[in-house]
Length: 219
Image 1: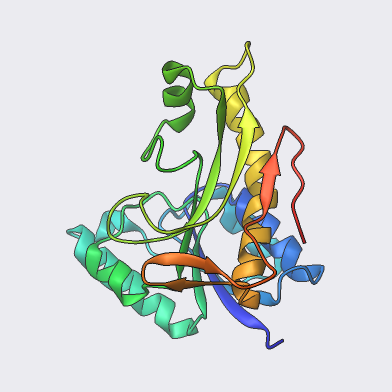
Image 2: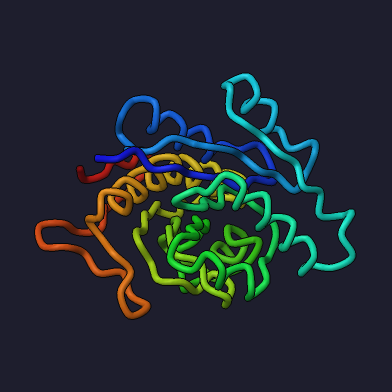
């Protein structure tokens, strides 16, 4: 299979970035990371990228007068690398409709909840407040509507009696580190495709299942 190019967008520590890079290096993911772009110069993930030998670029959103002009600069930087896929890995910016449409079908995100439940921020706090028994993460295609794109894969963790937002967040993050690379692997191999705004799984394949505090996934 031809190696595909990933470009990752980050705003913080880049823990999902590191999980994806490990999957690329050990052959689980038929891809390489061509570049990492951040909107925050002090993002901790950038230092790790430089140590790992990954190309990085900073496009600070604060220097642009509005969201549209920032997105134009971001798109130009992305296109310089001509990636096959654009992967949001803790990128804390809401993208404009025109940006999303430019990369429709190639723009992927992971969200720390079982969408469509709890879109947006503070998902762990909302889950605890709602009293639900299960929480988790969702890998999905990005569309203009926030956290509402076609779902590629989901994973779940139980909510424990003594959970607080921090303990729940840590368990969900552990889940994300396994769910995201596995979901991307299926997507890059063509095991699932986006068709008529839905994710369709090819015969013989199904969305990977993840559950529990130490989740595992299907091949």
